[in-house]
Amino acid sequence: MNLALFDFDGTLTTRETFPDFLAFAAPPARVAAGRIALAPLYVGYKAGLVSGCRIRAAAIGFAFRGVSAARVAAAGERFAAQVLPGLLRAAAMERLAWHRARGDCVAVVSGGLELFLAPWCRRHGLALIGSRLAVREGYLTGRYLGAQCVGEEKARRVREAFALAGFPRVYAYGDTHEDHALLRLAHEPWYRWQPWREAAAPAPG
Image 1 (tube, rainbow, N blue to C red):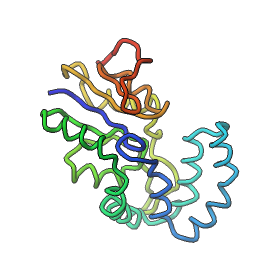
Image 2 (cartoon, rainbow, N blue to C red; image 1 turned 30 degrees about the vertical axis):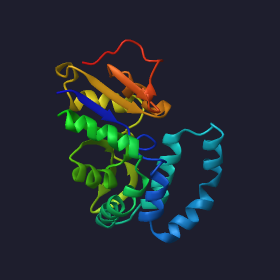
Image 3 (cartoon, rainbow, N blue to C red; image 1 turned 120 degrees about the vertical axis):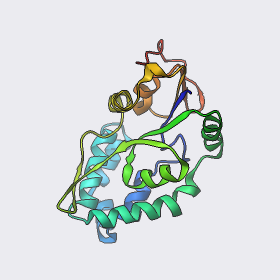
Image 4 (cartoon, one colour; image 1 turned 45 degrees about the vertical axis):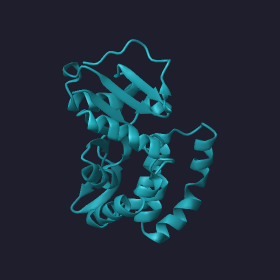
């Protein structure tokens, strides 16, 4: 049995799902106000001056601070069932099905929120490593629980979850610089559905 590690946004999907989920799950008044309040950060992000981690953290705080965790979890279930199927990349899902047919262990490793990725992964029989939000007394704090699952955090959490040396072959699929550390874990790294030529010798384990 081999191991296949898939990024989600832009790899299994045709676009980033984070903004879609915020618009779907956050209170409408916060969505409208957030578009204005976070506009300078968004411009900085597009210009390469603001990191993805920073703008996501700001957006989470604005959208979900003090909102019922149960309410957002229910929205995550609906989002997974109603929205995600229309955003999936057909060729990517075929590759995922190919791994499953071979009996490989398949995991989604994503900076996306487990609130909506967990129900989707359950439906598809996939393991999940994603970003989590902190909860206090039943309400979201507006902060991530631990680090966002991007960059080196992806690799760290994969090593924590899987004994990589026990797999004959490790595959990894990603589409941005936030996936490079994940790709370096693999014997066969794929970047934007092409073999990743930048990878050094794989170092699983």
